[in-house]
Amino acid sequence: MEYAKTEQLGRRIALVSTIAGAALAAAKIIVGVHAGSTAVLSDGLEASGDVLSSAIVYAGLGLARKPPDSEHPYGHGRYETIAGLGVGALLLLAGAGIFWHSLRSFHQTSALPVYTLYPLFAAIVIKVLLAATKFRVAKRIASTSLHADGWHDLTDLLSTCVALIAVGLTLADPVRFAAADHVGGLLIGLLIFFLSIQVVRRTIGQLLDTMPDEAKMAEIRRAALAVHGALGIEKCFARRSGLQYYVDLHLEVDPEMTVRESHEIATRVRSAVKESLPWVADVLVHVEPSPDAASPEWQTLLERSHGK
Image (cartoon, rainbow, N blue to C red; front, side, top):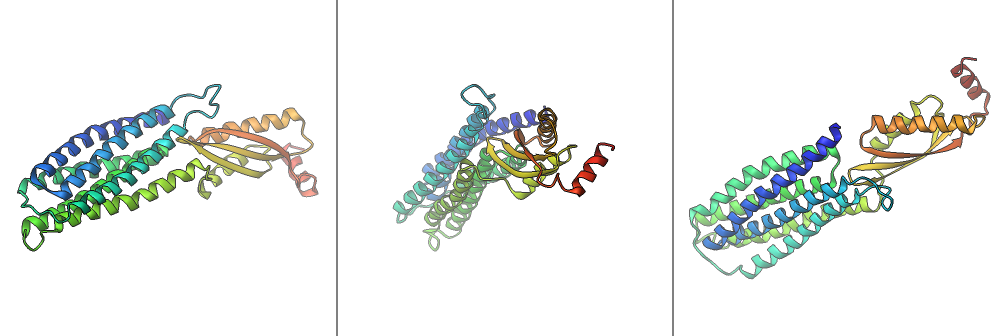
């Protein structure tokens, strides 16, 4: 129940981010065009991409919560991963587009008014709050798209700081720093482009069923081996689908057990892993005969465990 509430919180954060981002993007673009600032306009265009990415995250988190059906027995969690990939792709396009726009307008000069700074200050405060909240919730629910959207907020924050410095220099000395506004736009484009590569690479890794880190795999093994009758683990694989993992576990049991007894142990292992690790959606347990169960040492331990 708590996990479901946290997922809903993730969707609400994405919705709030979309609304706040739309207001900031509109303010930056209007001020950038009116004041003739390349850096502020570039930052506004990047913020527009942020609005679209937040909308994608909101939709992705909603679709990922759909229950499994006959055609999708593993659920619809991939929607969330695809949403993260979409955010990364938008970042790539936004970075390239902003860089090109800044390059084309590099030789244009204009005097900037002081109000050019106002939407930039507002954006810094709002984006700091949004990014911190998204990272915290994304860690709790292991959300790829929300984490990617948090990085998008940071790129927007960094680009806003670059725009703020560029506009500040231009306002301080319009003659000496005449090109600072355009250089700021170029830097914003490059920054967004390179950070987006990291987001895309991380998301593609999940689409390729990359295993979780060793710490998570160790948690799965510990939970399984804590069950009475589980003698060892031959293999353990896990792949991510949306916000959770699906585990394939090859469990070693006493080869002298009946099929019914080994099945009961496998069922208890499945329940133990799911109950102790909320980020595991399901566990498929394969029962294997333990190669060490025939040794005298193992026989002694088994007899003691059964009270003989």
